[in-house]
Length: 273
Image (cartoon, rainbow, N blue to C red):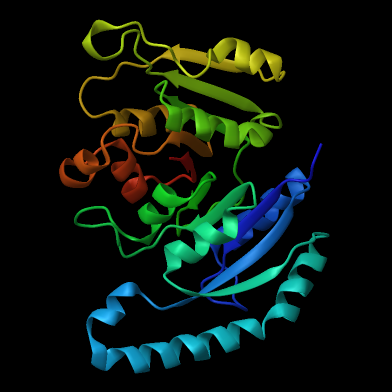
């Protein structure tokens, strides 16, 4: 079985933060290769103001050089945990750098911004990264978590997005102490047509030797609070779900499960689009 490869975003090289601590713990438990990535920010919006381009480019270049000098810090950190991995530095838009970094890996680990950057329309770097990345993303709340993936709640709706998230979480689920599934999938598709889900839940878990409790989930009103309440009642430390299973535009303008959990969930989220 190939060694899993994780990428963790390190916004302040040389400094530990919640996502990095959790990434180290996860890599040790899953015997994964862990690479750190820093993005010297050069947002595309900078080019809208010609006077600011030179200054922004200079600042990004300085940040890139400073981060590149942290290779030894990263190597020592990995050695302390018995891990292997690379230190990578990119320059440009954060979401683009992270998407490129994880393209050849299995999981991207990022920390959720404390500034609610996705308001008001849900188009911050976190959501843009999840939307564009080809791999699952583990979003860690700033408050942190000592560990994750021991007691897992899966919010399943039968979408391609939820199937991708479930597949990405499989290595964690195989080692979890408890796995609970909220099955909110539909029986009929648009216009009453028979709905073919991307997988049958019970056989999928059985083939992998995962003991999962599956319960029907049909909450009244907005699902996000009900998902959180169930996760807390089951003492879960991770929620797995597909991101933007409904229209992206609808969620940006009117809100939705993905956006609500991105902004409010106190637990790590493993998501995929």
